[in-house]
Image (cartoon, rainbow, N blue to C red; front, side):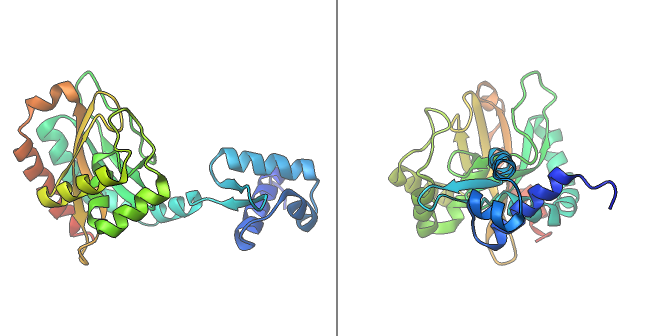
Length: 248
């Protein structure tokens, strides 16, 4: 068919082969797809650089990451849930004139579904569609806390808690204590744990089964945190979370 771009066709063929065969090496891909090894190598390295593949060193083969799963899952409901949640997010944004984030958990990270900016001079560096770890963001901690003790321990073991700043939690015991605190108080704080100078307040959004896969937060430069009443901000976040939870 005219108009097809051969390089894209080959890249998709490589991606599909690796997916359906739970991994493959350069030689196997070259042989099975009838492509030159140098061509396969270039495609694989490009997909690896984009985050769609990773090399399994013990087997010397390439496997797919969760990036495609993330895109598929987010696109499946993102438009409708964002439209539903937007009035609640807008109300928070209007009230506080600070950055409002709405996220969904995907494996060991949160994906930013929506962001409403502050009109103030200093803003928050985050992107819709971007991913951040659970343990060092207010929204992530608000979700991780409701995975319980075992879920927290498994997360720490899988990720090894990479630090984003010198304030990030890096120990499993410290994370467990923090998650207990979050569950007890019903909200989470990110005090420069993800980005220096950034302070965030997050609350979980529960679905009908009582699980927390989404969260909402107010984010601001730390020097502005005393301009808002924490208890009132938490109450307003909870009200927004209750409203959004009706979607689920």
